[in-house]
Length: 66
Image 1: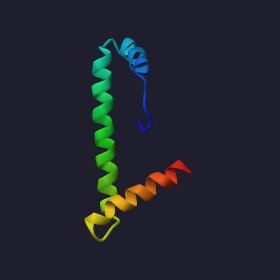
Image 2 (image 1 turned 30 degrees about the horizontal axis):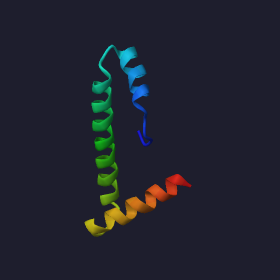
Image 3 (image 1 turned 180 degrees about the vertical axis):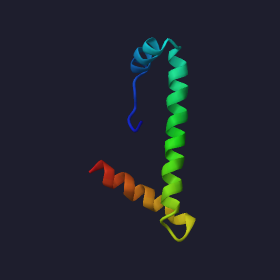
Image 4 (image 1 turned 120 degrees about the vertical axis):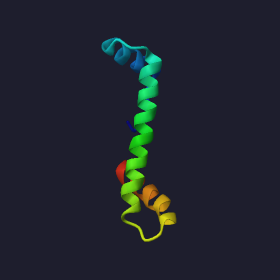
């Protein structure tokens, strides 16, 4: 969910599921959007001002990369 997948990987998943690779790509895109929103919603619960959320998310991403 956090890395870039090649379209070849979507082809393999699509084959296993019996669907089109573009359907897999759309599903992954929607899952990433939903994941991003859920993370943002949780971060918003931890800050006093909504404008602080972007900074906190940036710190979270950096912490997860290390």
